[in-house]
Length: 515
Figure 1 (tube, helix red, strand yellow):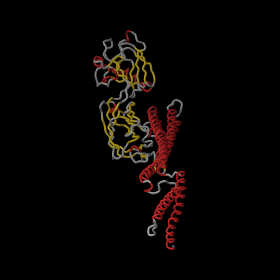
Figure 2 (spheres, rainbow, N blue to C red):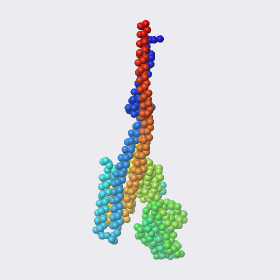
Figure 3 (cartoon, rainbow, N blue to C red):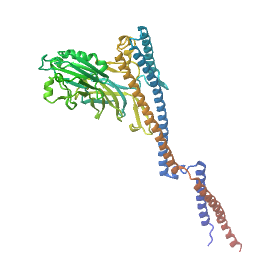
Figure 4 (tube, rainbow, N blue to C red):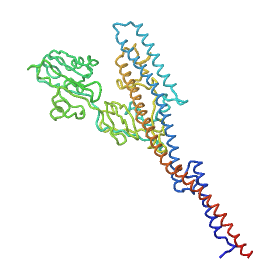
């Protein structure tokens, strides 16, 4: 049946032609943009995922730039520290030269002091001038701000890293669980011999050995323990061993001890001409490295088993709990080297470090240098590093006779300058300063190599994988799209021809009218 009001074949052809045209336009759009997803209707779920991936990629790209910039900052600071270390080494050489007092004149010593003063001024100048893009690095502006530090408990503290994210302050609690000790040997002073208590009952020769060296000293019979103490202390600088009277009474005995604290310290007291007459001389050590007892008579401690016969003893490092973590002890020093929340190094005072169960608390209220190393802003993708001041007034803190001495004490007019002839003290301060700079350089080097460089590599790998994933979701497959384009072109051309044919079929009705 033929109808002219409704041309159904034409409608069908037009509908299919529209579809073919839309498909053709879609293929042309994808081929021209290179993207499979150009608008939300192309793939709603794919658009959401690809946009999220794109956001992550942008964040990671910036993280790489942040890490590279942080590496540049660290390299700048480390380069300045290398120069400071060279200056410290040169100062040490000048001090050692000045200690050769029998071979250099006072004028030469004064010239050395001028060089030392100049070098110390240069160190402070480097501290004040080292910068990166206007950011001062070594003047203390990037160090942590502390409050409530007890001078009677902590002589010096350095915070290497602290996590202050989402908090205004970080409380630090330090509690000793085992006191630091010197190496100690005890000699009783009560004798039933001809010379009575507090005196040697026969002539003896003692070999005194310590961390700094060995000395052999001869004593005549009848020599009081007070004079024995005085003789031992005359060689304290060359042996590292000192002597004191137990309970400040020669009749109560004698105590030999290392000058410094820690497990690296030791003492040995041997009688090298032991004969029957000299059998009275016996040294004792604390049993199982027990804590140093309160003042008591040595015979009482021997009877109680607190002291046992020994010719050698070693010291003990302090053990302390810092915010619930066991710190690493080295003499009177406590450190948390690699804790994620808190990393520090502290020099405890002798009173605090040699008392079991002593406790102190202070606060970290701010400061430090924060580096954003990840694409998301959270504490797990950030590091916080403290860069201390390396000025001469802050460098080389060393406890000497209960007072902390810094590098400034070696310059003219200081307590350890060359004119004071306190060469040993000056060397100790320099050794501490060199160790501090070396430790800081090592930490910065480890940070740059093991954190920043590895972070750049890992983030770049993540960027590659995320980009590949985003490409799979959003990018157009040109092989498939060109194939679909050819199909769409054919269908569009065929649809046009079919629509033309469908429209022309109504003309056949006119033939019926002509008949």
